[in-house]
Image (cartoon, rainbow, N blue to C red; front, side, top):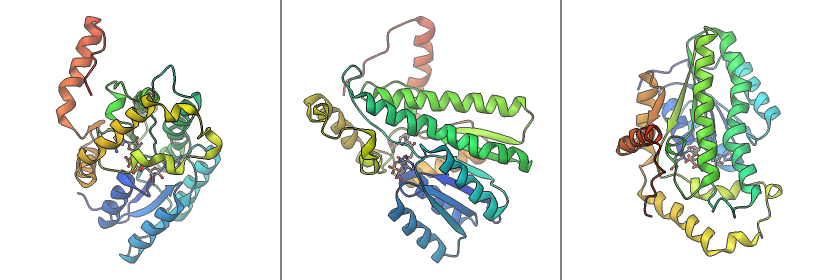
Length: 282
Ligand SMILES: NC(=O)c1ccc[n+]([C@@H]2O[C@H](COP(=O)([O-])OP(=O)(O)OC[C@H]3O[C@@H](n4cnc5c(N)ncnc54)[C@H](O)[C@@H]3O)[C@@H](O)[C@H]2O)c1
């Protein structure tokens, strides 16, 4: 890992999982941090942990669904440190279901957090990063589910295809405008984080927790697929090691699970051949 002394790193979804490990790595490499999350308790604990080791850390507790709160976070980061060298647009959530049965509220939640939350980060940070006129990076966390379709979680797949394609267009537009900002997209498969436990921070106003669908065999079976897969995922420190190495190499599509590469090329071949998506047994 490079030396980040006097560099500034901003991260959303910093209180747990990939965001937390990124924060720890960059603090250890000398960076100043601006960290955001909806989870006040874990974010404050991380701030205390990193500050006790000598890192400069400011935090903001908000929901990335709010564009004004994201603007405030960007303003706070630039006002505190004067620049942002790396912005990890990382907060995200998952929901499962059968597409014709899953409550619409789940789609609203995933599209609001995973797509519009990322868009809010782009709109808040990118103009300021362009204006600072230094080489800097915006790194959006999508998923392997932004490159490959899986049958279990339609709204998650749709949201991650959207955030991945949004990042491609962002990078094209950053190039076309002649800026010094580069975009990157992180596409992990399963990593051992708290993602399967994301309902804990869901705004109760965004859904009816008593919707009978959440008690169906279909929903419970699909949810179990996610919870059972998590412990077998890549350890978070290994995923973040790859993410940082690839980002430093300038890689645009940051893939953490090479075992899926044949499926990615297979998908492209299937598109050209016009064949049906392949159902993988669970
Ligand atoms: N863990 C995996 O297997 C995996 C695989 C592919 C992609 N991802 C993506 O990685 C990113 C990070 O997730 P993770 O796996 O570290 O999960 P995680 O749940 O451990 O961490 C996500 C963090 O985002 C925060 N968050 C959730 N909703 C928020 C909101 N509306 N506003 C602000 N903060 C919010 C959570 O409080 C949490 O701290 C997500 O975008 C996720 O979709 C994860």
